[in-house]
Amino acid sequence: MSTTREPAHYVEIGGRRVEVDSEGYLVDRSQWSEEFARELARGEGLELTPAHWEVIHYLRGYYAEHGVQAQVRVMIRHFTRKWGPERGSNYHLHEMFPRGGPQKQGNRMAGLLRTKGEH
Image 1: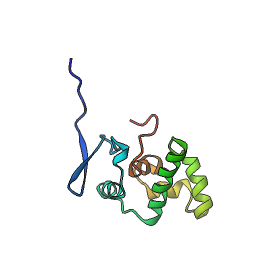
Image 2: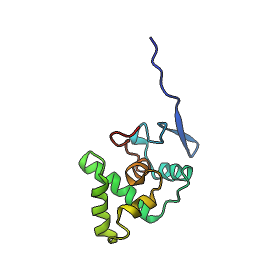
Image 3: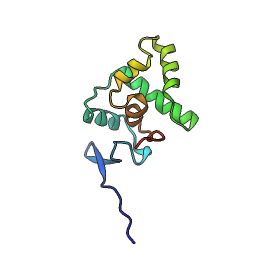
Image 4: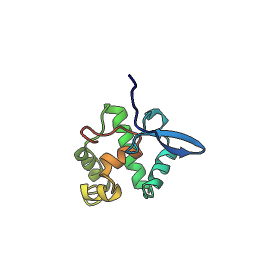
């Protein structure tokens, strides 16, 4: 009996391959780096601004502290306090991360796992 594994996907970083799943999520979260996030963003047509980095570092910090990914409403509350109601809004966060919003594209950039129910 053989087990089939889906074909490997990689992000090239400085001549080394970092394995990701078919959606671009890291297979081994310990391999995350800012270079990984930059390269993944480049491949998704996204230029990371200082605001993107704030979201990415917030997502990583929230996960490190709580052991789960931040829900969108938690992100909105945090960034509304930090940036004001317009920039911290759900709409603005989804404009920043147009491929699935901060909970999908942001989590990918932050080296976190897929959210529950995402396929």
